[in-house]
View 1: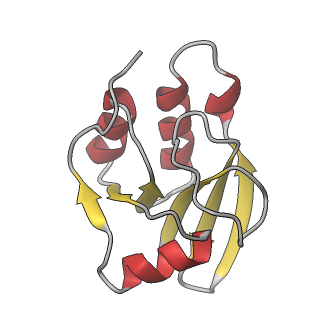
View 2: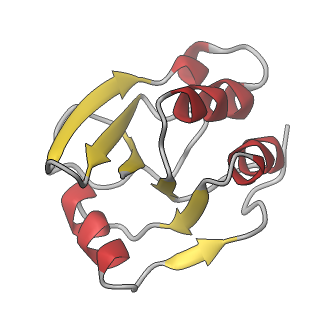
Length: 117
């Protein structure tokens, strides 16, 4: 299963970025083989619809769970419509957030945490 986290830097020891649509990178961790990869977020350079571009990218990558700080209404609707579970991450490293998710300690998001623009 693939888990996507928002990241400011290409470093698995970096703290979770609290912004989804405009984070610099997505850290996608594959639980089946304990591997990961960083991807540039296409939403970071969007003039409009950063959350839409970011969400569509995550859907295309086959992600099943997202851990981030805040999600706008367009972003969360796209993710939920594609059966991707969304979680409110903690101000911990990316790998620590994955462990928190696996231990059932993160809060699932069902609604936007931030207003759209």
